[in-house]
Length: 250
Image (cartoon, rainbow, N blue to C red):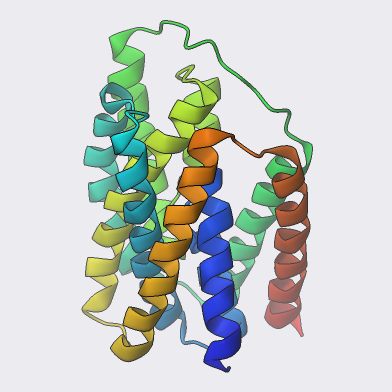
């Protein structure tokens, strides 16, 4: 596929997804699979670009002091362990099964974006046990799924931080980016040992991913544009889900 199509997709995905606490991998991985990348290459490239977008957004969120480190660090530690394990499992999963799992994740993510209400948690107090042990378990599972599928895990982190640990919405989105940054590069490091990578493409795409992350994070920091973006992106995710299922069964 032409770079004139690939690069705008990477830029746009990074811009939109960093606005809602994700990195871009939710689109990168299935998109790369759909255009014919080998599974390991698609996942490795997705994780690297996801990490770049998250790192770009994180610079803005840290400057504006939006990251809750007391919540984030337990998830970072365990996601760093889970992501390489998930990455190693990618090679052992049947391609059809992999595509079906990825399609299911996109479907659930689309439902969340289309139908979830905009929740503004008041930052209720929860025990340190819930924050440390609950957050640690969440990080382990999400790191594993992110490393396996190449999606980073932010699509799961944000709602869990909001509903389980009672983190305010903007803080949850910023903290998710902090966690995703570490889990993405951890998963990529495991994949890079076996995947065939086109570094010329990846480095060029990284520029677009970084730029998208910068713009998206600055928009979110000023005003979280929720409903319209969630609806539009939910529709796109449903379309990609349908394409993946078609690829798996036809």
